[in-house]
Length: 270
Ligand SMILES: [Zn+2]
Ligand SMILES: [Zn+2]
Figure 1 (cartoon, rainbow, N blue to C red):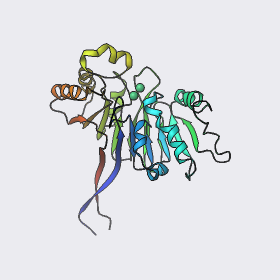
Figure 2: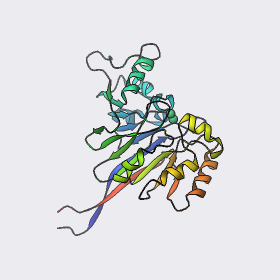
Figure 3: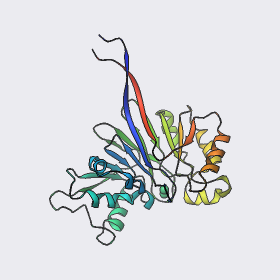
């Protein structure tokens, strides 16, 4: 019997977009999990190859804001002729309704829930707060978020390792008791604005660095934190302030091109 341990990659998370806006080199929220599951479909979908798009089986959508969905209709049209499997899309019921009414309505885009007739490429499914979606490799639990439109975050776990994406959110006191009972190995959290536009941040449902301090103060156990949805042009100012206020945390900007491999150490099999 082997006495050594081996490192197993449990979860691979690739960041194709994480900006709070667009501009040269900046793409909006698009995360790819273990090649098969897309978390939000922002403009980062543009960076996926055809091969990568064809591997995606499931898409979870945090909310209906256009920076999180625009890649979905475009991806479906792109892979329509070649796909082998339908794409299952999970989101809050309000978001499903919005996608059906405002995107897949034959005016803005074809209704892919009816195309092709005998095996439609798009299947829309409701996912409510606290629901857990089981895929072959992951459990994805919908978390509460505080944003002007119905929004969720996600707790993604393979049973051993887990990460949290807050979705777009302002102060969200309902989140922290959940994370305290399931401490994440990585927390991706929205801080879009600087402290001098607190009112704009409050109205638009995003955090500022000072509010981040208050929010992380509710976490019993520190974990690595990556900041997402930074407003273009303010990335450095926001990050400097966050790091100044939270010097003891493993805290950095989430960056397009990042790839996280959450590992576990397991005994070698016989
Ligand atoms: Zn939003
Ligand atoms: Zn957004």
